[in-house]
Image 1 (cartoon, rainbow, N blue to C red):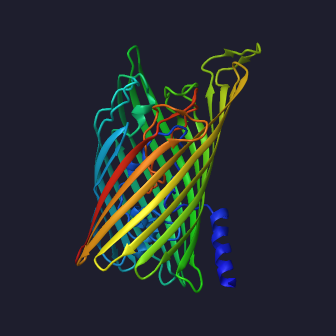
Image 2: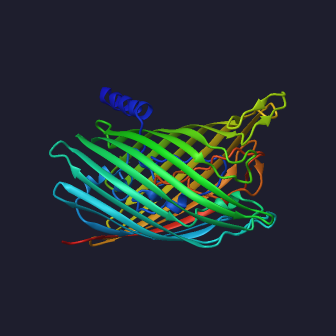
Image 3: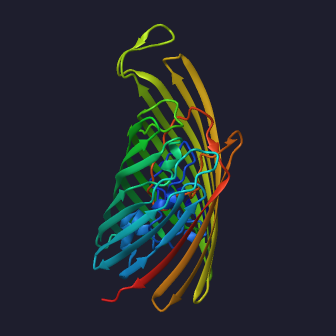
Length: 471
């Protein structure tokens, strides 16, 4: 009992005091419910059918691409193809063809991934004058390299991920009334990971992250054309701890992710009341997980609390008169927007392993809630607004083995619906509750009206084929 209490306290300490983040090292900040996550669901995952539980349960396929130091656990050279097909009710569909590998040689290990993706246009609701976005092609490349540090049980590795983006899913939903939207840009993601195998089933990990997101939106309206820049710079840090519960088959783990973001350029979305306002964000994930692996069954549960604070503002292009009679100088702030998020996610997964065939079941619930407080220094007023929506994501997986060949199918259905106080409407596209790739983008728009949330769905399918490569 004393050992049980000690392990609970250690995991809880790590989850509330140490910056971490295994699965969700990049925390996406969104003030409107537009889907983007499945676009970046590129890498293979062994736990995806179990709602992607990860805090206390290893994922040998996905882990090296999230924390490159976990590539040190590789024991053979494997090649994996994981094509994915996904669609949302309003913002279109997509198909991706990723190919990835992880190899090991002596104390060195490494890996890479390459993916080509096509995004199709969505079908807009009949009562909304938003044009469909033309089909586009994106490319993704990742490379990693690391080393086991002697007999210490520690591994150190780094990775670079680059995305060439002709389109990002859901952006067309943010420019109501436009006639055409052309996108172009890229994403760069750098990670340095450390993994320590501490013995007796205990492990400690650390990741440093830097992400650079750059997009240009050429938006054409009936009477004008706009060029909107979308820029975000993210620094992140992560530590995680996992330990067995003495005398049981259970493991307990804790995480905390910290992201610090600057938004030098925020697009002039139609929903915004104030155009072109830059800003900063601080986002955190605090989570605790339990997992049990028996002879034929595996169970896992993750609970994550996600507090986020964002501040955006607008500045005067020229001296501006206020309602109080004084003038704001050029470059002075005309508006301040403060966002305060209180988000939660709960993931539960179960797997049954047979000799040749396995199946997985999972359910994930995510609640997003934020409060906006806006100071208008020109008109001399303060405005408050609250928004709330939910996402349910049931998942199912089926896999089989033939010799060294492993084939896995996963299906996910995400349903989003409005929370108390939200109005029904059409500014919506479904997406996953937790982004398993650790990559996405932010939408920090201060809405000038109630955010509309439509009860709708999105569906994702992935087939994973893993083949051992003989030397």
